Image 1 (tube, rainbow, N blue to C red):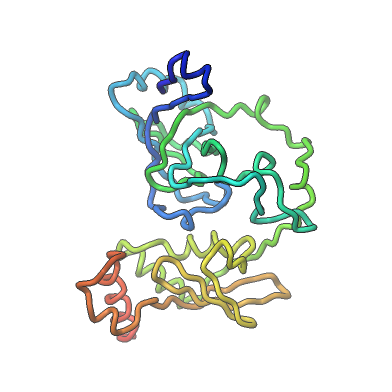
Image 2: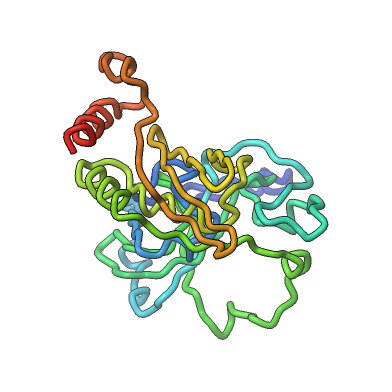
Length: 274
């Protein structure tokens, strides 16, 4: 970490150098949940830079169950003084950005509490991170329960929230299709769909979802997840996977901006053979 000179500091300018990067399968913002605890079971790795003495800086860290990761929202730019949270106050009003967890901030710095699984040299394996692949890590701090946890603290407008939570289950057909795609090195459709549909599932402003009556379609990259809705039970059943490409588009593998047409063509062929 490199701070600006004292003269720059007087002018209010501060610069930081990342100590490492977060590495994981999730490469897009919609691949990760808004809160890290919803991402359990999908570990990633914090890779620290070599040649900076970080081996010694990691000494004694392995004894902690949880860590704070301070990171840079490197894909975000711009901010607004007020924001509309994913789960707003009961009256639907906007709130001040400093009273929110919005990733669009005057200084795009984030803080997430992760579970530490292993320390191996300059690599930290962690779970429950709400970070995308390549996120710059600015600092690491141990989570200390007696100092960092205040479960009885008031939470302002958040105490007014009425979370829209649903149960997400898989049909046998969906499970088979999603497992096949994952085995072919495709995206983890089951985990990503569950993350997106577990809370506020029908918020089209924050996810690529369309709903008609008791059925819906969720877009994950170029795949389409068809699901059934049981409003009374507040349950969503993932029914089937389909490709978002037309037959004509899959016939032209030369034009492949997302680099996934071969995977989709293989999936479509396998589906037709069954």
